[in-house]
Image 1 (cartoon, helix red, strand yellow):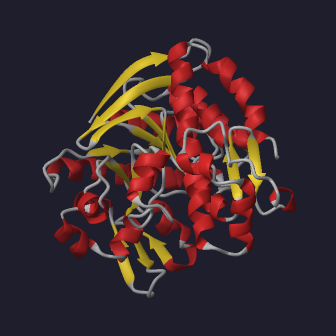
Image 2: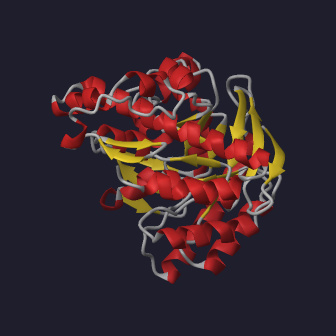
Image 3: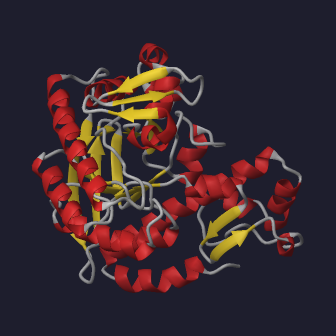
Length: 376
């Protein structure tokens, strides 16, 4: 994997670059739709390509490991061939999912013993077998196995957790070096910075992660309940200690305004379930603000979903029709809302990139955020 940094905004740390992988190029800053079980909920791969214009999607190691299982994915020739997605894939290591099963897992130095949420069976994830699993899935970008501490966490717990994450990272790096990709293209490892909301821990973790000299770096453990301003502060602090010639990925973030603010702090890559999850609940993000499509005010609004968006779905269906689908509990409504929201997120980062290159990103961002936040 290579990363070419094209330009940086004069008035912020915003960057525009290109990541090149075995499955094609990714123009940054980029938003990555979440395809937890090998599928972005309610969307086909053609819709992701043609309407959303996604350049990379996520898969999740925990969920794919449990179902359909590695034997099926390996026989298929990897996740790209199994699900028909021809562009890059990033896999989350499963750490976040395992640690969210607080009542059904036990953390040890070796790894984590956990119970499946599907059938209660017991499994062990270690830094080594998580790398092996992601090798089999065939992700272009593999995430290191980490512990994601909850918010809030006491300082002593956050420190202990971070140190465990660092020891696991050293094992991930070693195991990546001792193994080969399975399907004829290179795979890249991204370590994850932890440290909760403590600046000294975040600095120590960022410096340790940078010392591993991997192809890219990630910031984890944010957008887990802390105030927005704290998230921005921690993100900016981490970026101070990360190399400028490697892509930076902020995991699990967030709202459209979160994304623009974090782009201004130097982040290149984002993912979040918000556009699809909120879309399935009737919340639309648009170029003019946020819409709750279930509200009665849209019942006779025959304007299109978003005339400011270059997406066929957003320009084809009306607000009144989509509201009708939600009221009638018609599944088509979930798909339309999900396509629209993801297309909006990809439009937003494409616009951000264009303004970084033009040199007026900061002024554009400051103008956009109040518009994006308003409830229509």
